[in-house]
Length: 235
Image (cartoon, rainbow, N blue to C red; front, side):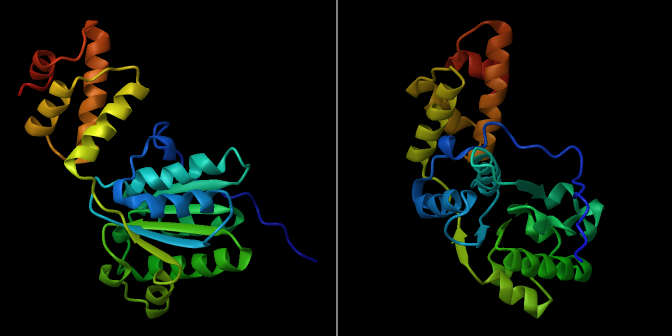
């Protein structure tokens, strides 16, 4: 007689960004990675995918996109950013194999911690046995992560490993305009160039700036122009 597992208890306060979707991710050189992740979210293709890249290249966006994409096809999925969850302890990973897709971000946060590494190793094996999908992301490649448990290090090099590459400046401009249009905003070429040359060129920071300008323009009932950007951002 088999014993039915109790429903898993996920931590409170972790939610997906509504705008973190494949539809509004400008892939640049990352088209193959996006295609493989979209297939995985539908339960097709690879069972294990590892993403790595520097902050701001969009790993977190892609992991959350997987969870959004899994929902319409009625696949259960969860996004777990370890940078916010290490306090929960490795017990957080218990029974996650009940879900059809598990997306774990910020893997570098627990690399070298024996209990976490063992928990990840066992989760990997349970997900594989269940035929479910595991997507991991970190700020460096599996071989550079500093994993101490040899069996886990070997697992991390299975499946597909993608370096998520940053967008070039021209593609960042396209992405910024696209994100603005999705919000009902029109950014002129002049405004986009000003943002690129006076603020951070990191895509994540550019989007944070766009969020702020959107709120301020709505509050002030003003269009986003270069003088308005100067006023709001104090540049």
